[in-house]
Structures are given as structure tokens and as C-alpha cells.
Length: 398
Ligand code: GLA
Image (spheres, rainbow, N blue to C red):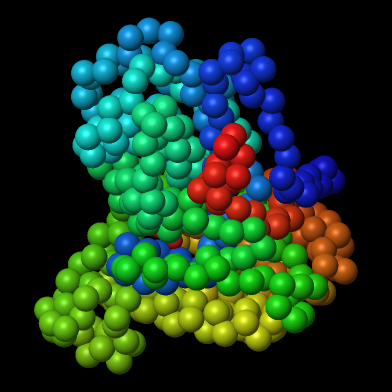
């Protein structure tokens, strides 16, 4: 029997280079898990993520050279460039912070020479958005070194653009926005078209007796990899058909299932299924808001289960390992619901579990998974924490 690895994900401190380099400042960005609303964030839909206590630390010091230096304790290869350098992506981790630098440069912000050192403990390829965490931490570090600030909405937008335009991954805005704007004890309801958002309390009524349990299938997921791009294209093609048929539609965020049915014959079967997932998931997010305010874990859990079925059957972004984790979780005592979270094709599940049952739940889930796939899953029991904007404001000296 494999070891059951359980991490109580909590706020914790890292040692930074502050102690040895006087002028160093460290900026911190969390990871995120999404409760509902998946792949809805590049067609104007709704998402419901929360920030979780895994962190990227971006420590910035005055440059050791006349240019810019990026290094990471997690990856080999430092990247050095002159201030005039406008080279494009090189295909490794350094593209994420460099993409952020390029976005700032495009906005006329030219940081003075710096060394940027990235560290942290966000699991990679697990669907909890290590890349957006790096981008947002980097953005706050580079803005501070440039003695500039931007509204958090703009930080999120530029970090997404870094990933779309520089890294070359067609992601939506959810991850960067959640990591910047989340609030402790709350989920973030975001309209990805308008960028209006609400912080929804997670402790209403019986919800205060539940835990958010994230289970890492250890099956690697990469947003930059092909399948995400294929789904993205199918969705955009379906949306284009819908907009032609219904000119008043701004995007899928406005669309109804009835409209989709009437446009069905004009699009590929794949586009139809992908759009059906998106339109139904948008509706589920809005119902989840009501369930959260009502403090109703049964209703929220049911929506999560329906969301998973839709990701599995319509969006086709799950895999056997994740389906097994969701089905096993859902059958365990105290579990209200469970689903694939994040981009998909592996990564993590998120489950809503009665606190009194969490310990037994994690043991049973990981043991079943180990037995079935011979993989040691990791479990993270997560509280919702502050996003980077709130953290960095609170932690910086006045
Ligand atoms: C990844 C992307 C997000 C979003 C999710 C799926 O995390 O970065 O923009 O599309 O997948 O909801």
C-alpha cells in the first residue's frame, strides 16, 4: 500500500533573501482552485475560483548587471537580457516572467535593471495555475521596482496577455484574475466579459461545516499543450456560428441552450458539445452562487457533480484517473460533490466534504486510487486565502 500524502494547505512563511540583501523585496502570489465554471473564461462566461495557500515568491533586487536577470530555484537555466532586448519566447519557464516584462514595456513601463528570483511551492501541471501565480507575483515585483502601480484588473489582464501573446497559450482570464483579486474565506464570482466580480462567503450555514479538498491525480496537465488549444478552437468556431445566427449575442456568456439547439446543424458536432458544456456551466455557476448564499452544501455539491459530467461527456477534457477520483469521492460518506478542476486532461479534482469526514475521506480516496492506478495521489485540504493584490498591499512596509 502506498503512502497517503496529505497536506493541510495553510499559510506559511518562506525564507527570502531579505535577510542578506537589504534592497530585496518579495512579492507573493497564491495558486487557485476553481469550484465551478470551467472553460467559460474565454467566451465571456462566469467562473467561481478561490485562491489556495500554495505560493510563488518573486524576490526582486537591484540588477547585478545593466540588464534583466531571471532565475528560479525550481528550474535550471537563468535568463539574462539587456534592457533593449525584445526577443520572443524561448520555450522554458522564463517565458512566463519575461512575457510579463514585455507587457509592461508595451505599456511604457521600463523597469530599472533587476535580478528576479522565483521560488515557491505551487504544484506544477496540476491544474492549480502555477503559471498564473508566477505571472502575477512577477507583475507586482516589476511594478514595485518601477515605482508604478496598476489596478488589479489591469494586472490580471496584462498577465493573461503575457500568456496568450508571449508564451503562446490561449488561456482565459480566470487564473490571473483569481490570483490577483481573491479574498480569504471567499470564492470569487467573476464575469469574465465585464471583469465585474463579487466575493462570495464560504461560511454560510452548513457550508461552514465543510472542507474544500483538492486531490492531485499526479497525471500531468499542461495548458500550453495541444488539447486545450483544440478545445479552444472548437469553442470559438461554435461561438462564431452562434453570433452569425443571433447577431445580438456578444459571446457564449449570453447564449441559451435553446439558441444552441437551433444553431446545431450549422456547426461541427464537437463545437456543439463544447458549447453545450459552456452554456450549461455558466448556468451552474449562477446556481452555485445561490447555493453558497443559502449555505447549502448539498445543492453546491450536486452542481459540482453535474459540472464534472459535462466536462467529461461534452467538453471531453477529463481522463480515466480523474473520472475514477470523482466517482470514488462522490460515493464516500460526507462528500457532497466532486469534479475535475482547471484546464483538465489530468490535474486535480475538487471535492466538498463534511469536516467530520475529511480524514476518513482522504484515506479512502487515496487508497482506492493507489489500488486502481498504482499512483500515490496528493491531497490538499484548502482554506480560501487572499489574492496577491491584498497580500502584497498588507505585507509591504508602509
Ligand atoms: C486553464 C486556463 C484558464 C481556464 C481553465 C479552464 O486553467 O488557464 O483560463 O480556461 O483552464 O477553466
